[in-house]
Amino acid sequence: MRFLMMTTDDGSAGNPPDEAMMAQMAEFIEEMSKAGVLLATGGLDPRATRITSSGGKITVTDGPYTEAKEVVVGFALIETRTKEEAIELSKRFWKIVGDGEGVIQQVFGPGDAFPGQ
Amino acid sequence: MTASDTHRAIDAVWRIESARIIAGLARMVHDIGLAEELAQDALVAALEQWPESGVPDNPGAWLMAIAKRRAVDRLRRQQRLEQKLEEIGHGLETEDPAPEFDAVLDAVDDEPIEDDILRLVFTACHPILSPQARAALTLRMLGGLTTEEIARAFLVSEATVAQRIVRAKRTLSEAGVPFEVPEGAERAGRLASVLEVVYLIFNEGYAATAGTEWMRLDLCQEALRLGRILAELAPQEPEVHGLVALMEVQASRSRARTGPSGEPVQLLDQNRALWDRLLIMRGVEALLRAEKLGAPPGPYVLQAAIAICHAQAATAEETDWARICALYEVLARVAPSPIVELNRAVALAMAYGPERGLELVDTLVSEPSLKDYHLLPSVRGDLLARLGRLDEARDEFRRAASLTRNAPERDLLLDRAAACGPD
Figure 1 (tube, each protein chain N blue to C red):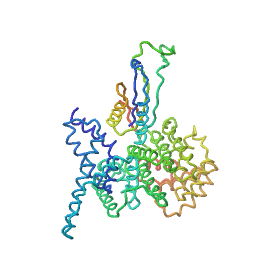
Figure 2: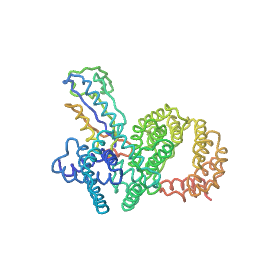
Figure 3: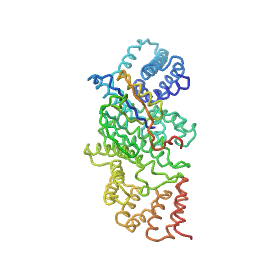
Figure 4: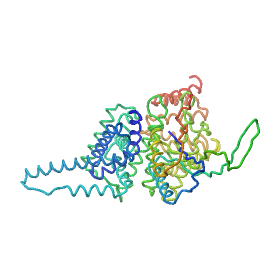
């Protein structure tokens, strides 16, 4: 099963991660690689470009947005056997990062039935 | 957290940690069978205690600590027993053995666990064991799968798997197979034995040889995971990356390989939009890693290069068959086998016409090892059909259908026979 682990940020923390944490993160990523579960990972620029389509009209707006509550700032796509395993790995991630918030969602891959199918 | 939630959490922790725990213990006790038993003891302790106490903060360390304690108990007991025997024999007193155990414990903390995992892979895949036994042991020790899960994956009874594992452990123990990564002249052969097992697991899932299910994806994913682990543990081995590349690219097609009613769809008929681009990209990266090492290409690297050649063609018509022929030619030299020749025949037919392919296939008809191999008559039937020799083609498709053990594939072959017209 594939899961997308995302870290979200509302911009309130403001402090960029320090070097020690970056090193720990790199170690964590290496560990996930070595465990054979990491498929892809990356950091995202919080200054997102928003695209909305409404009634055939497409609007493109550049950030930052004052009303933005949560922006995805990082992701890891992992392949595990169960959701619990993904959660366990995510717990380890948060133990390194400290305070923060994220979401885990299953990514439907080959062999997974889509909901309702 | 309910008890069943805790059990699922324990299951997850076990799958993440078990290989590390078994590997670390194996270095202490020099016996992977015993190491696995001790690790299982720790798992049982977790199952007993965690529903009450909750999952500890560092579950891996908890399990390792318990398992190590059991290992030390076991070693002490054993040594006491040996001491007793010796005392009976010689009437001699010996010193307290405890300090030695502490040294062993310290050693476990010092050396990187990755090296132990690699040792575990090489030991579980020792050529002294049959490929089936190696596969079962590897899934058990490195994949953290239960006997029941392995049995289900290989469509055999749980008792069969259990027995396979017990025997394999005993064989390793009796032969005194050292817990180490082989070096020097032995290494290449031993590595081939490891890769063979990983690919066997993959293929068992990819083209299920029996049963109605065309694929058992879980096994493919186990094999991929093992391959990806190996690629990080032995990054200097081009064939490891070659195998990973091959599996990534083959797995990328899994969604396209079956039709709506579960029937197999052959490579050239597949909807390429269903191919998983991420896995293809990972396959290309793995192949590049292999190529960067600069060694002459081995069988897995070559097979991966062929698979990637297919993956890079936007449509079946755009396939670079001449390049695929050339790669098969090298493969036939590096790892000659009738199967490679059969595949080369298919490529030749695509690149230079069915006659060229049939010419080669006809030399394989008398090949004893292909006597019961359904793909030989299947390929031959296809080439004959393309040459308009429909009566011969029909016979070949029927023969192929009678040889395959896979139900959807049999249906497909019978359809092709019927398409050749009535007898």
